[in-house]
Amino acid sequence: MERSKAIAATLALALGTGTAGAAQWNMATPYPDATFHTQNIQQFAEDVAEATDGELEITVHSAGSLVKHPQIKRAVQTMQVQAGEVFISLLGNEDQVFAVDSIPFLATSYEDAERLWEASRGAIEERLADDGIRLLYAVPWPAQGLYTSREVDEVSDLEGLKFRAYNPTTSRLAELTDMVATQVEVPEIPQAFSTGIVEAMITSPSTGANSKAWDFVDRFYDIQAWLPKNMVIVNEQAFGGLDEGSREAVLEAAAKAESRGWEMSRAEAAEKKAILEDNGMEVLQPSEALMSGLNEIGATMTDEWLEKTGADGEAIIEAYRQ
Ligand code: PCA
Image (tube, rainbow, N blue to C red):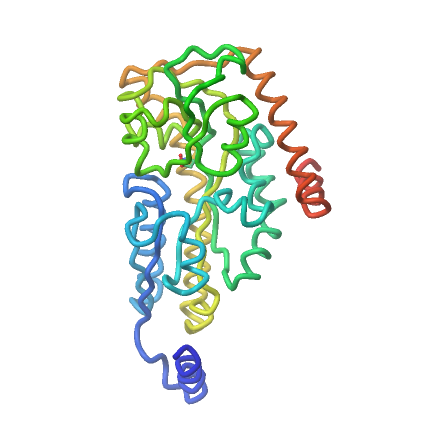
């Protein structure tokens, strides 16, 4: 099937008869429509449709409605869908390189996050290319903070908390702080809290505000722990099957979406913290003791990651620290 399509496309090109018709892509994303990442992707899809005069139509299936988050990368790889969005560090067990995106307290500002992205993008692109996937762009979430009703003045105060994890790194962080972790995807956060499966989480003001965190916790500690990214990916064969004009349109729209997304993220950080406060949550600066304890754990986790990744990891951290 793919082969004959490719042959037809090549023939059409050689004969100058143009393409066989408009391409339709399905794109699976994990987060709800009100998420700025999802809105940015919708804009990306519109930009592509406009730039290609409708030759490439991308239909976005958000909130894990078509494919659940843990299966999205594989679904793109096997062409169940042509494109998708994945939280990079969700793939940390599949390949440790992806975990660099969520090492606690390694990169804690937008400037650091940009440098870390520059230092790690090549390695991440290579891993995806091995699986026939092309990376189009990545956008960070605002800095991650701690949501809990418990007063937390130092790391030992975290002990025993039922903690919502979202990737292998946050599960490890829970282990090192004696919390009890359960992995929960964003659409299920309210239910996980209301049923008592979890009582604390570390995530952005965006996800906290969109999940109405004030319904289940009182405090937001602004620990600025890391700025993890979502990446938008496409099956390489699907991409290669487009005519040249459409390929260029996709790449241009992706570059625009990347810079627009980083801007949206910066704006979100303050906006969504204000919403937490407006709804009665306490937005708190962490104590020095809490921060120094967390920074120690961050250093441990950087070391652990370097041990697992060896020369590959060292090259990334070295480039980042330069
Ligand atoms: N929101 C997503 C990933 C990071 C973030 O800020 C989540 O909580 O799963």
